[in-house]
Structures are given as structure tokens and as C-alpha cells.
Amino acid sequence: MYKKLKPYIMLAPVMIIILGIFTMGLVLGFFQSLGYFPVIGLNDFTLKYYKEVLLDKSFIDSFKFSIYISLISSVLSVIIGVLLAYSIFQSKHKKGIEEIIYKLPIIVPHSIAALLVYNMLTQSGVLARVLFSLGFISEQAQFPSLIFDKNGIGIIVTYIWKETPFIAMVVYTVLSNINEKLAEAALNLGANKRQVFWRIILPLIMPSILSSFIIIFSFSFGSFEVPYLLGPTNPKTLPVKAYIEYTNPDLTHRPYTMVINMILTFYSFLLVWLYSKTFKLISKFNG
Amino acid sequence: MKRNSYISKVIMCVIIFLLIFPLGVVLLWSFVKIWPWPNLVPRDFGIRAFEYILNPNNKSIRILCFSVCLSSVVTVITLLISIPAAKALGVYNFKGKDFFKILVLAPIIVPTIAVAMGIHVAFIKLGLANTVLGVVLVHLIPCLPYGIRILTNVFEIIGESMEMQARVLGANSIQTFIRITLPLIAPGLLSAGSLVFIVSFSQYFLTFLIGGGRIITFSMLMFPYIQSGDRMMACSYSIVFILSTLVILLIIEKIVRSYYKGENYFYM
Image (tube, rainbow over all chains, first blue to last red):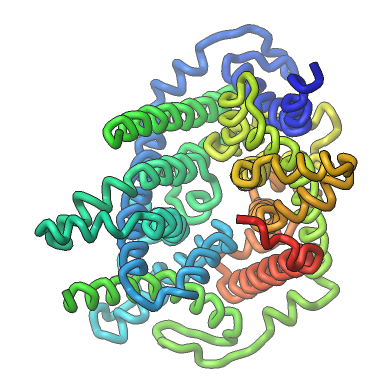
């Protein structure tokens, strides 16, 4: 009997925290999103708030803006990360370099990463100064505003800075575990280097690329600090919009916040589901 | 063939430069006195910002120490409850294992703001909001997945055979844990501990919301400077933040290594 229960007992402390705070937080948020918030006298379950939020144009804009930022930054991070990992892998003297590159962005939090990009890209930033001294622009105002802009360039660059090393680390680990004989065999049979990359190496690293893509996509989709620091007033990303609604002193606005949070949560679960589906599909093809 | 390797070397150097260079700019800015547009290099250097941060009257150092303590407590609790959970997930087979594995990793994927805003009212009711205990509890949520994930991998590799041998030879469960299990998982504890500490130490939003402005950590202290674009102060705070993280990581590594020096040669 004890043997059977043992793993559950060992999991109990963690489960108390996860169920008590994480799951409970989501459930309470879900109830509030349905309009059940007894603290301020809202006692009826209703879908009214979902309807209002989903039909609200500013919500749609925020949603599109969030998806756009996460998608662009994650795709670019993956491309640059794979390039970096592959080029480190190909260069001979690799000891040491990758250690520093992987560790630094992990230690630097998102707020400082935002500061790095702020330093580089504002109209008085390093890039503008370099362009000025090279004679490309003749005054500050000619430099396009890349921070607080409607295209979210500042946010995207910050995420790329932070996430590229993560992708590179994952891909590099897989690359160094790939049997070199596979590439050699392909070369022997007359494939060129490009074909070896596209036909042999890429399919082998694809599962880890996909899984890390999902992780950075969902992270940037639900993260608050960077768009709060570098984003435009309009459109806001969903997490920033949720926070602004949350700080509204009128507590009857609370359900709207929770609706946005629930939609964020729903999409992250959807991504995890998609991920496990594609993962199964890929492993089927790999045999 | 040769051209190809040149190209990849150039690509590597360019990307690495783009990753490292902004950090160099932050370091430079933290020592700036005057750096007017459009100069490429600062006109004058000074350490006014560091003097401000190090001045005991401004409480920055006290808040830094408090932050380090808070995150250390979070790290220790996370590791303590992660070890048994990771062993269960890594070594044993039981009903619902896959479900537990997903549930334990879910906090990485689900946005923390959704969880924090949902639990906030409950924390206020329970008197946990605006307290250190509340902040520690809520920090556990983003930290646990990393601790459990890394330690589960470790337990999957080492299995249970070493512990079984010790038990067969007459060691009791406490002896087995201290003499066998801990040295075996020491490298995993090191990386899990470092990562968990970093996650907790750089947490802004959770501390801000659940701490309600009463509990102030170092990452909250530097946030307004970044927000207002005060580069000199923001960069100096960032440098102090990064350096203290590095020092703590070094200390964690020293502690783990000194305890289990040379004892983990049979690991992997």
C-alpha cells in the first residue's frame, strides 16, 4: 500500500503549491471573468464580459499586435539562433565562447534587456549617433523612432536579444550530439554542404527547434515588462492591456481584466496542445 | 569549402558582437558624467551614480541584501520540495505520471500575470498580500518548473540502484539521502539552484503585484529608472544587478563544490 502511495506523497508538497496558487489563481480568475466576484456584489454567472471584450475593437487590435510581436520576434530568434549555433558548431575554436553567450542573457532580466535596446535605438541612442557621424542623418529627428513605435520594433528587438542565445544553446546541444557519420555519409554520396544542412541536419534538429519556438512564443505572448517599458500607447499588447484594466479603481471593471487573462491562458494551452500534436507527427515521420 | 568556413566565422562574430555590444554600452553609460548628442564617446566620466547607489542613506544596498535573502529562501524552498517530486517523476512509475509532468511544467507556459491577478484577491483575504511570506509563495510558481525539470532529468539518469545498494548494506534512509543521493544529484542541484535563484531575483511583476509596493526588491528598485529613461542611473543599477547575480552564482557553485568535492565522479 505504502509503495503505491509513495510517489504521490513525494509529489504532495509541490502539488499543494501548484494546485493552491497556480491552479487556484486560474480558477478564481475564470470565475471573475464570468462575472462571479462576490467581493463587490457580483454574484451571477454571465458571458456578457466575454461578448463585450471580443467585440471591442481595441481588444482585437491588441490581440493582433501581441500575435504579431510574438510571431516576428520568435521566428527571427529561431533563424538567428540556428545560424549562431551552426556557425559556432562549424568553427573549430569553440570552447569558452558559447559559455559566456548562453549565460549572459539568462542572467540579464527583461527589464535590463529593454534598457539595452533603449540605449541603442532611441533618437539619441548609439545607432543614431553612429549614423550621424557617418553623415547619414543630419539631426536627431531624422532618425526614425524605433522605440514606443506602432510597429513594436523596440519590443521585437528586445525579445530577439533575449531569446536568440536560448535557441542557440538548445540547437547547439542537439547539433553536438548528432552522429557526424550521417553528414559524412551524405557528403560521400555526393550531397553538397547546403543539401547536408537542409536534408540531414535540419530535420534532426527540427523537434527541438519547434519545442523551443513554442516556449519563446508563449513567453513573449504573455510577458508584461518589455511591452510596458518599450511599447506604444496604442495598440497595447494584451498583458499590458490587462494590467491597465486591473489598475482601474472601479472594481466592476475587474471581469474585463480576467477575460483578457483567460484568453491569454487559453492561447498558451492551445500552443502546448499544438506542440504535442506536431511533435507526435514529426516523431512518426522519423520512425 | 574554405570560403564556407569564412562565411560562418563572420556570421558567428557578427551575431556575438550584436549580443555583447549593448552590454558594453550599459557598462560605459554607468560611468558617464556628460555624454551629449551627437558625441560617439562620453565627454566626461564619473562615478556619481555608483556613489548614490552605495550611499547607505539611499537604502539601495539594504534592498539588495533583502532581495538576495528573499531569493535565497525561495531557492532553498524550491529545491527542498523539488527533490522528492523530481525523484517521483524521474524514478517511479505510477498512475497519472504524464498528467503530473505536464501540470508541473504548466507555469512556464501560462502567463504569470493571469495567475497573479487571479490569486491576488484570495491573498488579500488570507492576509498574504503585502507580506514577505506572500511574495515568497508566489515566487515559487515560476521557479518550481525549472527546479523540477532539471532534477527530474538528473534522477532519470542516476536511477535508484545506488540508493538500493546502500540500503541493502544497512544504511538507513537519512544516511542514504545524505551520503548517496545528495552527492549524486549535486551537479543538478547546482544548475537548478542557479536558475531558480535567477528567476526569483529578476522577478518584477509578481513582487510588484503581491508585494503591493510594501515589499521592495532590487529589480523593482531599478524599474522606475529604466521606465523614465534615466540612462546613467538605470545603467548603474543594471551593472550592480548583473554583478551581484554573478557573485551569488559563484558562491552557490563554491558551496556545492566544497561539500561534494571529488565525491561525484561516478555521476555520468
